[in-house]
Length: 163
Image (cartoon, rainbow, N blue to C red; front, side, top):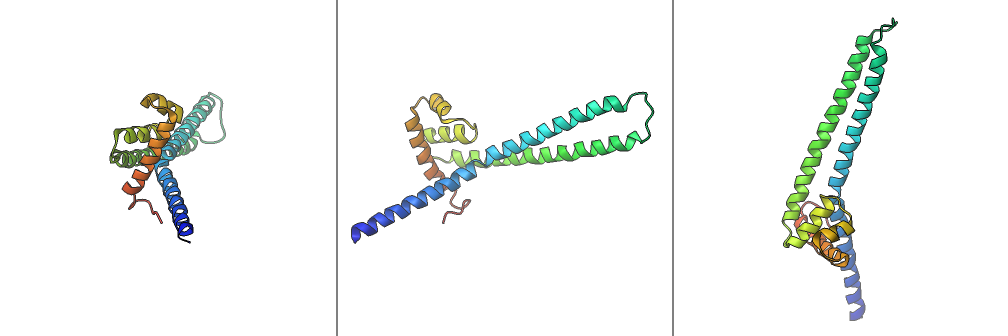
């Protein structure tokens, strides 16, 4: 019976660690998501500007028109302004998230952990590239990452709800 209870406790502990690690990774990947949001809005603005410029070439011809062009231009400028505000908001969020993650990573105890976590979650690098940059084999990088995740779980215990 003691052996069975001990195995149950170990399994429960292992499940809790896995759950906590997943929560930490989700928290860390927020930077990737913030960066994607900025890129998406910037691409949308570039597309809108391109469409407006191509429409502008037609709009400013010498051909007579039945509708007023000033209202159309104002509407287009309002669209650009709204999109620009979304981009600014997304950029500020990206900077804030980057700073939060960077500050948490800097609290890890070893340079190896800080380096691996920075490359992975702030540099958004793949494991093979990280392995090359830190000059360690990929198994060692995975081991360091696992240890760093557990350390981040302790650092972020007040930020991330770990049940």
